[in-house]
Length: 350
Image (cartoon, rainbow, N blue to C red; front, side):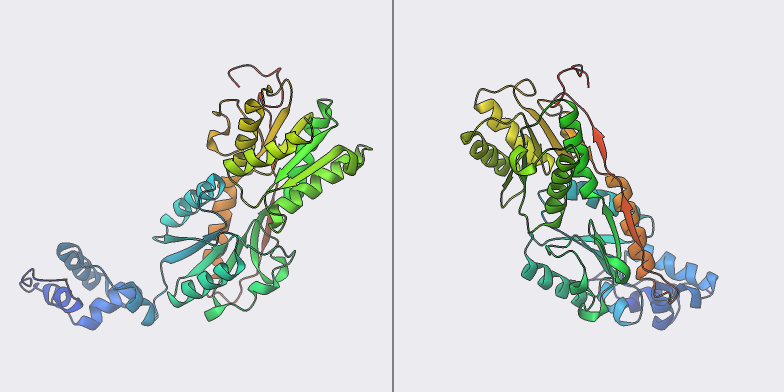
């Protein structure tokens, strides 16, 4: 079938312009875009060639309304300034790119009302599904069972139970690993700096720290000083450490994430203290530049690549419409990475 002469390049390219160039009906162009399996391969090639030649961009909302699956995935995180969430987002984007999906990043700022509004907005945009780092302090995910538009959701770093797909890192174990390391170095007067206790990740890390102390025969009320701040950035860590130092100098500080640890380091140096000679320092997440910080930071490494890859796979499975789909809850283990901020025996090249 000979292709018709192309339209004059005026204004946006329309569906009928593609149909005219390919020499087919507009319905055939629509099927090629939305349901390619319904179109003969030769005809499909004609339409695809016309789309490329004209630079036609399909209307995503129109495609979804006609029954095509959306290629947009929502990602709602607690803080877009957090390197942990940005590294996770990068891994997720890389994982879904291979299946021609794109990621729409949203920031709940740890606020439940904002989180609810974002989920409603994403449902209205008819995204394929949402990867969500929950802002709720609750230990269960019941609040995410009845979402607008029956939005498929996979929970990140949260226990989804039997009714939700989820992938999480064992934060309780991470807290234990950090304290065990510091106790093995001989420290007994330890401080924990965490974000808001309403954020379950920090609460679990603190709980793990307390349990490791108990198992070592130490009373956490006497040997573990806990400080919580509303934010999770460098300034928050610095402010928390300054408050901590006003009451005395601990042997070691375990921080609920690396950014808080960077801030604590600033406060310690500002007070004329040496890390790790005066105070040992441990972070959490092991973000990319933890090893390149002024003082290479000992940290509890989260398997971010695995977390993002598995989360993306779970959402694509969950949102596929397969009636045989079974919700899965994947738990990953963190790992202690020792550097000079806690152990002066480490070489300058660590």
